[in-house]
Length: 104
Image 1 (cartoon, rainbow, N blue to C red):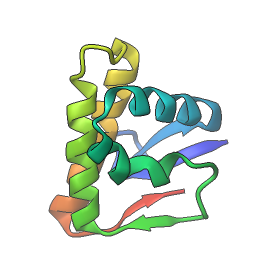
Image 2: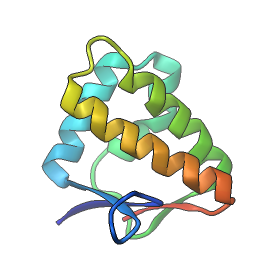
Image 3: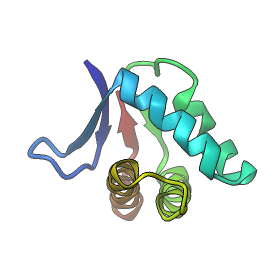
């Protein structure tokens, strides 16, 4: 089990990450993001999300942009940067399509 993020690149149109890795990702993001960017995404890393947590398209675009900046931070490990870039791309796809970005 873990987190499934809609508008992803796998065969089911998702990005997936275990709960443990999701928690670790949140800690890594908190270390590299500006306070403003972390404020936009903190709610995604405060424990288990409700089933089918919906993010409106405009917020998805803002989060995607924050994730994109974090993935380029020099202190972001390469493997985590790859994952966060995939999440950013998924957020941008939700934003561009005008659809809610679903985290479940």
